Image (cartoon, rainbow, N blue to C red; front, side, top):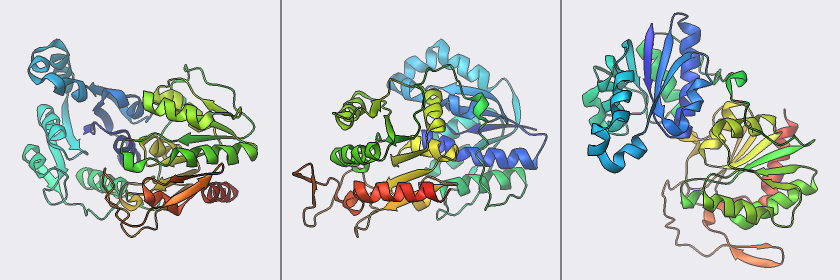
Length: 355
């Protein structure tokens, strides 16, 4: 049986789909998957042994000039790859108009969520058959349910396996030698309301290195690199990593003792690798889209307005300040005042102690 998965982005959403692939592989020994994914995340599906072909798509680049994209060779090559196989099923696990369009562009019976349980109801116009999966479920469970109903098998919801074969992760990236104890700080994210205060990160790095750990700081944008350099100032046990591929980051996470992260796609990668991870949640709801799996701890805000799920903070209560290195600073966004660096490190060490 040949199945096409359409889950193009973002990193966390792509990773959330992997357990469903594992379920299907175990239940249907004859199944083979191809996967359409945004080019920036094309490494991830290739790590799963049930995925035979990864078909990269460049929607983020192409939408800058739609007419030029439609006429150029790159789009025609993508369309040719997409239509080169007649699939038994095409599962749109994204639920957006763009993913629905890709599903319809392929050859096969298209499956997706119903218009009552999908992010963009117009996408259902591209499907031959739809299934209703409750909004109240975590994103991983929603995808697992969609796959199990479309492919007609049962799975154990208590068992979670992302199915990543670490031998498939590209080991060609040169990574620094592991210290005796090592922790990765994932400080970069997309929304400003999800940023943990820089002074908190710097204080946490000081606590971690005094406890004997080496702290690794990856980055993806110039802004994140500046933040990493600030966190690492005057601390020889903190390393700002060079620019990394996803495989390189996966290797660093894999060799670490644990991870401390904000709500970011790389946090989901740490969870997929079953790495002990403390995740910090302010404006977002981990019950619906947080890191999912073994050895995961979520620290949620105690503010009444959290989780607001907003990219701009609308808090109007009294100001929140914190002390660090003899100076006070405003905690922005204030929902992160619930868990300062001392508490976060305590929770991290407690998590490691339970494993």
